[in-house]
Figure 1 (cartoon, rainbow, N blue to C red):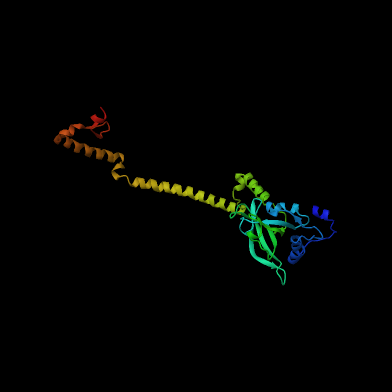
Figure 2 (cartoon, rainbow, N blue to C red):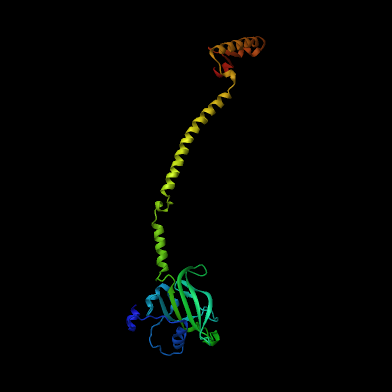
Length: 281
């Protein structure tokens, strides 16, 4: 880190203070105006930035980064802190932890960063441990009128639970780009070769059985249609003459008794045709 070079820290140096060490040796001294021997913790307004922008602003850190930051009120006359940061917000999680024995000197609060507007933000992997002094009057009456400052300084430890500097915006933008770059072929579900061959075999068997059934259905249907035709329409050559002769004798008798009999005529094949003059003038 660039901050390490500025501090001229010895090789192998590691900064891993306990919660009590952070409150007693750093936060209490900062709030009381005492100088810290090694300025290893940067001073920034943490709530103006996204968490993934903070590692580059730290004076020291590899997987966790420390900052002194002021904290403002959410409302001018209230005591609730303003948790908005960048385009998202920090949301408290779990119970507060008292720091210091036997006298409580500080309070530790755990928060998770959500990207977007509350309460529908997207949860990220960024975590913050915020340390504030205990037994401090933070009422609006304790400060100036319409003063939004809740704490002059709180101490914050920032880290990503995945152990990397994860840019949520960058991740979401690239996911959107990858989704937009997908072709229709990419969106199709992938089928295992064995399953595909089995499906193809089933389709071939179904196709062959369907052709066989179609031919059977056609034959059956043809027989059913034939069975619905009256028997007297299936004439042979010999029976046609006999039936025609019977009809001729019948019509001759009908023609003598009925005045409309003259309207019944015969065609060249000796078949009668009623009202032939009407249909064939």
